[in-house]
Image (cartoon, rainbow, N blue to C red; front, side):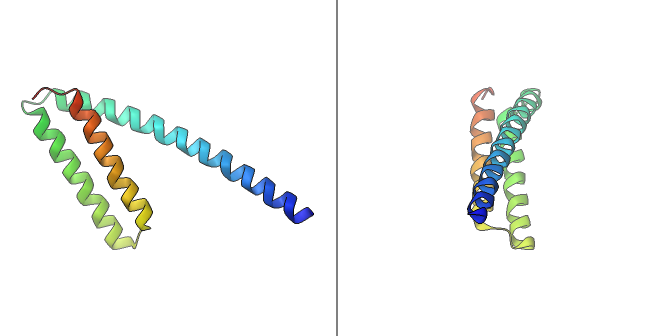
Length: 95
């Protein structure tokens, strides 16, 4: 019975930590998107700059994955996130 209580407590703690990390990731993503939108909007070719930033991000993720034998789920989610940020950033930039 004690093992079950410990397992339940551990699961509850992990759920709380996941929720906290999710909130941190959300805030970080929103701030990053706002900063990149503002930065790209100042450029003569904002769409081109946004594309270059995202290309560099993808290349960095792929290099990290190769060098560190990173978890494929983590790498896939990171690349999906780059696409999400790119879509959000580009949506407010002039052509």
